[in-house]
Length: 217
Image (cartoon, rainbow, N blue to C red; front, side, top):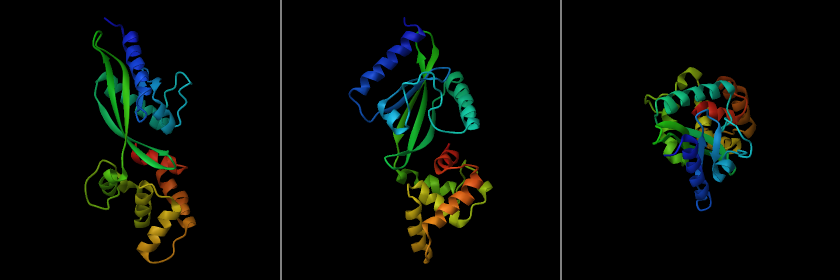
């Protein structure tokens, strides 16, 4: 029989062996207190995570309120109720916005029947697979969806800019596309202003990275 510490140590040692052979494995393990106890090299690279710092809980940049809520959710659903949870994580990787499917699974020691950790697995998603979800959430198509985007009272231009931004485009490309669609000149500075003076205020964020976090998670 393995006690909980020996069991999780065995799991992590096995993961570290994978690191020597699999270079596209983006994973994370958190202890029951939600401290990070393992992260794969790819995870560290994608999310700019310093694995040498012991006792960290934060693994995606977010605000304190959201972080506390997410921790309580993980403790209740994954550790207490032993549920597998699937969600979405978005970051900037290789110079562009990159969404990941995130699956969080309880790690259970069969000898003690205790939850000894949370296994987090990230799978890179293409934007084409997210397109319909984005269109629904922006109410471009009239489907019901969990995100209450209506409360932000978005204009047509704001919806278009968000859609193109979530497709990984910068202000210059967004301006060029919208200019062609609308048939008149739209500058990069106009799109920058739209984000800074309209969308950031509506979503109560101060950067495009935090805008992504508030929108998706």
